[in-house]
Length: 149
Image 1 (cartoon, rainbow, N blue to C red):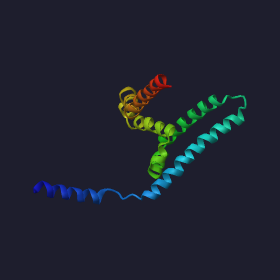
Image 2: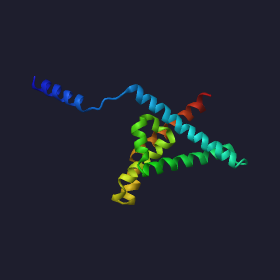
Image 3: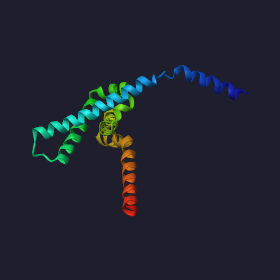
Image 4: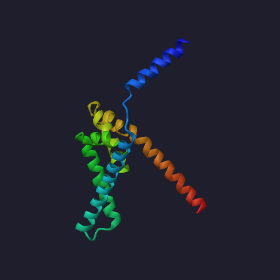
């Protein structure tokens, strides 16, 4: 009985401390901010193609990704991307900018521990599993495609 009472008090404590969310507002902000980031990427690509008309479309997309990665890292470094993340939630985790943020944040947090054991090691503590899962999943899909198509 003592265990159940302690568990009940702990659950009441959690209920009081957990911030209340507004699901519709969070979903709406996530949707429009994620869409805005995607529109920014499309605008960068269209601008590159209009400024450099001889640029191949695949090359323009490569430059667009580099620019988006830079913007994500830069906004993380100056503290803006964290505020965007708090406001937009999952909408700020649009694949390329969110991945850039997930690599830059730990690198900034652990830079005091040195370049090798701080920044380089901690930088991939979050991003490393994403890279591994992406590699394994793409290999599996490639093998399935090779075998069945």
